[in-house]
Image (cartoon, rainbow, N blue to C red; front, side, top):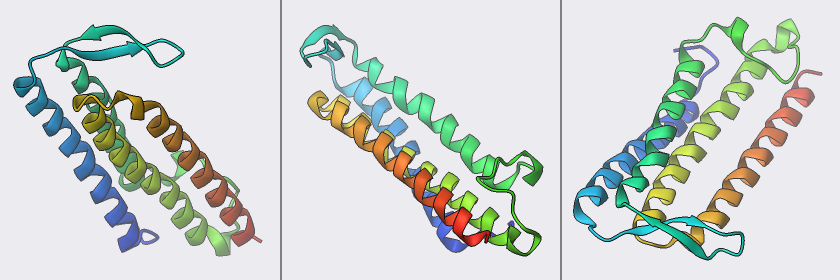
Length: 158
């Protein structure tokens, strides 16, 4: 394990991966148990304009699980020279900046995993009216996470 990673980084990653794997499992179970068609496309006003197979519920979890695994690999396996940091760390501040940058990735892992699980459940249980607000909430939380971590890195690098 990298010296700047903490138990909190690992907990965020584990929860994110568990949520993402759970969303894949739930989507597979739904594929075999739900027989009726579900809404798969909406017009701008939120009205259903196309129905499709419940198999469509698998698309998002199957895209997000590899994305999460790549984020975990980036945190643990990618060389630090490949990391794009918000600031060029001073030698005495490198550990802090790498720790905070790792928090950005592990928080994204957590947010993406929870999003995948909620998306799958809302989609499969026909609560599709919640998908727009859920996606908006993910965008806002990811943007705020980035802003907070960037500011934290700038302040800590002084």
